[in-house]
Image (cartoon, rainbow over all chains, first blue to last red; front, side):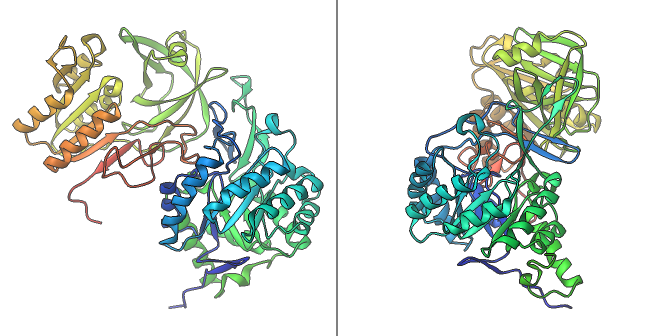
Length: 310
Length: 253
């Protein structure tokens, strides 16, 4: 009987029992849902992004599947930071009992507002605050995502770092930029402790019979299997450009996908759309498959995989 | 019961009035589904809403005229398309020999396929239909034709017993041994039935309603709180774990 491989790992100063992190956006913000995902095996859970004000999000349809992935434009529906911080405080109380770290996620319309939202959310003492500068579904309200421009991205990070004291800050980057390594360098220079990469890829589904875009928002963010090769490349670029840990996110559905993300240079792996493809036990299935891979390849510690394919 | 999140254009074959506000829309295809599963129906430019499956072969849904979307569905013409995503979620399974089905208002719709499946297995099926008034009682004749034993309750007494359908259920339980209670309807009715089922320790399968957005278990919008039924696990999602929740008293974990 081979020795059980070690999946425990470190992300900045955060200890994770395994590298799988619930990606922001999947499963919302309710303490009960975050607890459910934590109990199902996640190493950490990220709440859905919240902004300064409550947002209803876009009208339906907000999500659809096609042969190679999912597309969604939920529209950053969230209860607003004042309500979300109360929910996260409750979630934090519950998650502490099972030692699963809580990551908050925030968005806003300006660098200053990012700082304000971050200050409010800090009261929940999340283990990490993820700054979502890359949601593809809110162009109408906020113009170009901050993640598209190194200078704007850096300004947001400066504002957030000033507002949150010692809580580590992750910056969630967009795939659709000419040089993601340069954006990563710009945010790390302002003190970003972790990079989350990537957000969904902007895309559009048209139904030929309907002669219309499928999503009410017309365009949306592509996730699932179609996103994986894009994410792997972005993570590898970032890993070559900066020295902070990366939460590699995008199209991780199986244990092999997760292993590949680590090999691209990620220290932890975001999981979201897998719930659709694998069901409620997605985390447990992916973890089992990772262990199986490690046993088959005689790898004792998950850390041995990080950056292997760089 | 393969899940699919891809929209498919389905053509309307017939639209048949079931009562003043309710129609059955039949489409030109079959789906692989269990009774009690649901689908999302999209009308371009108008929106997308969840509907429980009425029959799977041919695919049909029951639509109550409650707003602009359901009104538009009811006024479609033969040959018009509705874009269907599904089947989705988890449905009912026939269990036991003597079963009780409780439909509150249009909650009767998903029970029809289940009753048919149960009758095909020669199960004895009692159906209790609850509604505000006689014109809102749904599918009574259809359940009769399946040789179900049908009881009706209306709040105004215009058909069947006057009062809530839960009173009729209590009467049935005093007379009969029931193996499984199936129900679909308003949350208040299901909460009351859960209490009754707990009191009598009867297995049950209830279909819960919640505000669904993505319908695919990812957005977290349709959580049903254990306040509605203490047997529901925390973080239970109607579209992903349900819409049908099963309680087995003798379940081995």
